[in-house]
Every structure is written in C-alpha cells, then in structure tokens.
Amino acid sequence: MDILNIMFIALIVLFFVWRILPTKGVRQITASQLKHELKDTNKQFIDVRTPSEFKGNHIRGFRNIPLDQLLKSSDSLSKDQEVVLICQSGMRSNKASKSLRKSGFEKVTNVKGGMSAWS
View 1 (cartoon, rainbow, N blue to C red):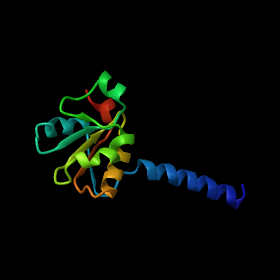
View 2 (view 1 turned 135 degrees about the horizontal axis):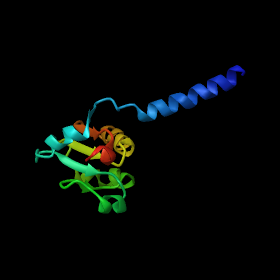
View 3 (view 1 turned 30 degrees about the vertical axis):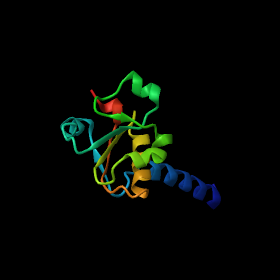
View 4 (view 1 turned 180 degrees about the vertical axis):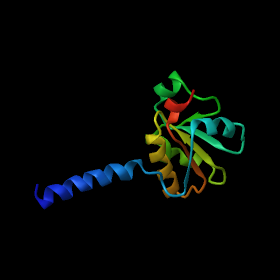
C-alpha cells in the first residue's frame, strides 16, 4: 500500500469515528435513566424519527419532530428548558443534538441506544 491509500483509509475511519462520538456539551443518558427523567415536566422530549416510525411506537410525553424538520421547528422549542432527544438507535438524535447545540441550545440530552434500548 502506498501512503495515499493509507491516508485515504485513515480519513474514512476518522469520519466514521467523528460521526458516532458524543457531541461536546450534550449529556448522554441511557434508556433506563430516561424512565426517571420522564417525570420532569420542565424538559422538552423530542422524538426525531419519521412520523411513521413514531406512529408505530413511541414513548408517551415525546413530541415528534423528524430530524429533517428539527431546525425549521426549533423556534417552537424553548432554549431555557432542557431538550431530550431520542430516535431509533441514537444516531439521528445524536446528529439532532449537534444541530441544536450549534443553534444555541445549551441544555441538550441524547438517549443512547434510542428506542431500540427502550423496553
């Protein structure tokens, strides 16, 4: 292998690692921790899955705002309250948490493992 191939492979690996790493300033919780958090009425619970995924199964108290609509709808969310995000596996909600942080939300929480970890 020449140096260009090694650099190319390293860039691909770094890209995928960067995508799955938790976002700085975003709190990460498990599905079992979420069960305790659901009682807090001062938090905004957002499910970023598609409407059909949400309709098929969702957690009571969560509002459905699909990932592709989140930034357009972010003005309906309070920046003063914590936003708790969930999706199917935790990947889309992690991406959503990055977007909200960049938009000025300071209290953002991602549910690791998403609905797949919820029992």
